[in-house]
Length: 277
Image 1 (cartoon, rainbow, N blue to C red):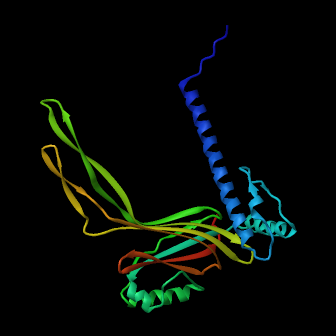
Image 2 (tube, rainbow, N blue to C red):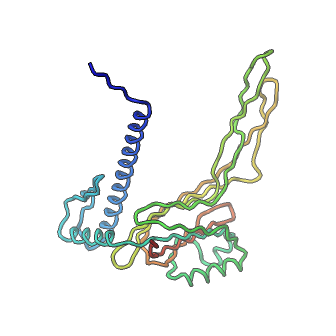
Image 3 (cartoon, rainbow, N blue to C red):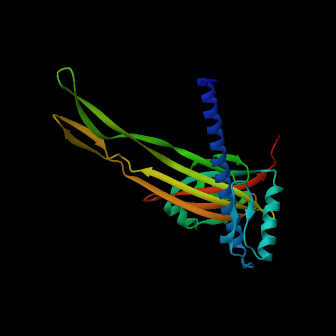
């Protein structure tokens, strides 16, 4: 009989190939779901169409299928042609500004609003700074169509949530073991852009903001024969999701409560720039 021997290196290579293939398939499936959701959303936004976008499907190979009427078919073809012909990059720029609620009311900032040009945005930012607002950060990211990018500005709070006691040898000594917890504080903006016919952009934005009350509340507890201290942070979290259709260079202003007397203003500006080879 002929015996075949497989080396450990060959097995590792096979596992690696399978892993790459599985990862690639997961990415294709995720991309197809994003494309499907984006197409459905845009077809539903067309008020003049009687399209039932629920019947639209995109498989993992990127093949689009569905039961659409003539108007829906025309809209779908226009959207796909716009996607295929888009070779640029979408740039998302966020500006995080914190200010007193009284200042926001004075300037008429109470709900989500749209600013047509960067010049108008900069005028508003100057007025905010003159009223004592604090510019926290202004991150920027470049991304391809349908790609999601996350802009995060913040810090991590590390604290002792609990303790446990262990008796160890020699001599049955008591050893205290802290349970360490981490909470991500600050502001996270997840953005995805899609080019639309007519020189427009579709934006999907999800903003999460988390803050902790200061000073940090603590408590002392008895653990065996010892007294230890634990932290009891009071975390306030806000989450906002919006779907927008904007023109390049336009800005969306999203106010988010950050404290009892303060607002966090998130300025999101989207634009299109050529991709440099």
